[in-house]
Image (tube, rainbow, N blue to C red):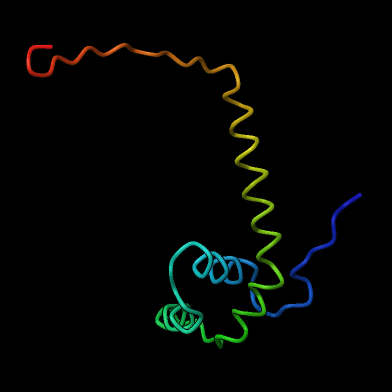
Amino acid sequence: MTTPNPFRSFKTSPEIIRVAVMMYTRFPLSLRNVEDLLHERGIDVSHETIRFWWHRFGPMFAAEIRRKRIDRLRAFSNYRWHVDEVFVKINGE
């Protein structure tokens, strides 16, 4: 069974939505700052649209990031930790 496309009802491309949501989430930017940064790149969206995208797609992107992080950790499950001992002499002791 295929999963339905969550972007099917939007005119904007999924890449632009992903960039806007990730910019707002990843960096300490306001919605208006993200709007300005996108406008400088020729993408004209309002801060309210970015807020809507964030509420709609933010949890989906967060779950995707968590899933990828867990998969990466499982790939290194056979990694061994090595502890090195360090001896520091302070004032002759």
